Structures are given as C-alpha cells and as structure tokens.
Image 1 (cartoon, protein in one colour):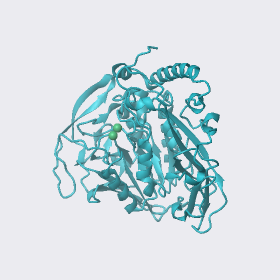
Image 2: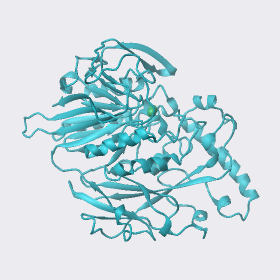
Image 3: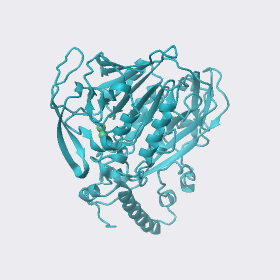
Length: 521
Ligand SMILES: [Fe+2]
Ligand SMILES: [Fe+2]
C-alpha cells in the first residue's frame, strides 16, 4: 500500500485498509527509532498495543520505571456502569485511572457501610501515538511520544434482581477508608413485569449543553439510558478516516462529565460514525471495547428489561453515507437482527421491541437526513416483526415520524396520539440533540404548543455511491431545533389480556415537554 496518505485517499478506503496502512507505517518507524535509542528504557521499549479487549496486559517496559507515582496518589475517575447480558443478575462497573495501578478492584455490598471483599478487575491499556492528534494532509504519524490511557472493568454477576448495590473502586494504595464519598450505587433489573422508565439520546460531546441534558437524565431516575452514538467526538472528523483529527484525551473529559449519572445508571451505547477510530483496530472499535463494557463481544447487542426488548445496532455496517465500515460484519449483524427479532416476538413476557442505532432511517434534517442503508437492510425486518420504536441520532435535532410501514406513513399520529405498532407500523424518533452543536430543518419546527402541520416536508435519502436522492414526505410529525432527551415510561398490563403501554415523551434541554405519544400492545 502507498506510503503517503491524504484525506482524499482515506475517504476511498475501508477502515480496515486505513488501519493496515497505519500499523505498517508505525511499525517501520518504531523499528528505526528503537535502533537509535538502545538503552533509553521506557520510550524505546514501549510497544504499540492493539486497542482491543485482549490487550489487557501492559508491556513490561511500562511496569518498570520507579518514577511511577504510588497508588496512593492515583485517583480513579469516570465511573460508569452497564448491563451484562442479563440485567437482572449482571452489571459491569468500569472506570478510568490516570496512571498505571496495581491490582484494581471493586468492593460491593447492599449497604454503603458494609462493602465486601475486593473483586479484582481487568485493566486495559490503550496506547495512542501523540502525532495523530493533528494528522495533516500527507504528514505521516511519527514518534513524538505516546499517550497512555488505562480503563478498568469488573464484570459482576450473581447479583439479585431489583436490588440496589453500593460499590467502591480502588487499587493497591487506594481503598474505601478515607474515600467514603466515592461510594456509588446501581440497581439491577426487576425480574417481573414492573413499571419502569428509561431515557435516550445521541450526539453528546462535551459542552455546557451536554452537561444540561446529562443532568436531565438523572432527574428522570431511569432504570437505564440509551446512547445512540457520537459519544465524545474525540474523533472529530466523523468519517472514519485515518486523516481525521483525533485526541484520545477527550474521552477523559467525557467520562468526567457523565460520571454523576453514568456511575449509577447503566449507560448502554451504540456505535456512531465518530466511534470509528481507525488507529486501533481494523474496524476502528478497539478503543470503544477498551472504554466500555459491551454485554456481548460485538458492536451490536441486545438485552431485555421487564416487558421490553432492546436492540443496539451498529449502523456503520450498512451506511451508504459514511462507508468506512460498510459491510464489515459480512452480513452477520443483519442475520443476527432477524434471529433476535423472531425470538423476541415468540416470547410471551416481551411486549415491546425498541431498536436504537446512530444514522436515521427516517429523518428530514438538512444535514444527514435519512440513511438508505438502514431503510433497505433493516426497515423490512422492523415491519415484519412490528418493532414498536426506533431511536436514532446523527442529526442534531429532535424529529418524530407518524407510524411507518413499507416506507410510507399508515396515518397521522399527532402529539398525544396512541399508536398500535402491530397494525400501524413503527415510530421512528431522532433524538440527536444531546449536546453537540445543532443542525437545522428546511421546514418550520412543529412541537407541543407550537404545532405547524406540514404534510410535504423536504428531505433526502443517502443512497449508494454518495448519491443524495431528494424526497418530500408526509410522515414528519414533530420537529424541534434544539437540545433534547427522550423519556419512555413502561406500564405493563396488570392482567393477561390487558393493554401494556410505552409513553414516549420528547423533552427539550430545559425539560419542557415537546412531544408525547403512547405506544400500546
Ligand atoms: Fe453527531
Ligand atoms: Fe453522526
């Protein structure tokens, strides 16, 4: 492969090929450097560790220097929790340490005053060459040093359903004594069909607006939060290109920003286009797998909570608009999706199916509008298994559709309507206003207290080959140009033949109700 990389070339290459170029470039440069720095210790010995979950053992050179601070001065930060495959019994506790520590652990108990013995955790070391922070035009990565990051994960199981647990994270030299204010708590899923609330948004980044929407999550006291991708914007280009600028330290700020919420409310993420960090692995997800605990070892997964099944999909796999990872699963994800949907619909205890992913299947926002790849690959499956609700981000606004089947609205669902997905089709909501700078619509906004019905809203579909096909749609029922949070209350039927509902509310960044519909089964 060519030794010169430009943004124009990067845009034409799949993420895997860009990664291969990067690795070969770094390997040859580091061999040269090692030859000239024999005896220089840590710098020459530091290896470029692949950013995958298996890269959990730091190199010997990193462990050696006596100059490393003792554990007593290295404070854990950025605590965040996520469900395991079974939210009634499993939870992952994750955090960040600013330097290498020995024997990181979590203590857990049902009272903050009675935490248990140490449960040792897995420490993952992510190494990033400093030179890629500003990868300019045809400049290659060089050896101006590495940024080391340390992410720690403890996967807890055998927990009891519907129970609140208190936990403390530490390491040799840092324990609960003297640090009792760092104790946090989480609650496992109830095992029965109990009412609960969950929240969702996408496109957060780090900003005062993101701080506000994050606080709004906490005010809803949700059982879990869905993040539809474009999480920190450490990768600021968003094209999955090796020439995009990228600073891994943005993740440190991100985890600090969300810690007050994410340390107690399971934070379930989906892959956005800004999560393709081509430096770390062929699919660009190596960094993500180091930072977050995924319930399954893939970029897509599912879990159930009470009477709701949730699917997190990786839309980069089918994206026409940003093709860096298009087709990377080789069709495995879509086959898995169909199998999951069929299995969920057979289960008597599951009423609602909710899917969330980054690019929008149905949206009219000026910036990215709709992703044709989601429509052609997945919408027919959402129809076949009558998925109740699809949540997207990518467009930094709020928009809700009327129920859609076979690509068209089956009727109008004004604010306050009740929708039966089984007969009427799927409701699609874009809630990409979590904090990143806002986009715009061509048509006027229309939301609670400000309704301006418009059955001919212009948008476009991203088709293969970078083609944008214009369309005029009737299904754009609610539009709001502003920050937002989606809040969903599940009320399972009390009797076998009763009606279960999901009440879906769109809130503005200030907590004002913009939209409300009831999904019923
Ligand atoms: Fe975004
Ligand atoms: Fe995006």
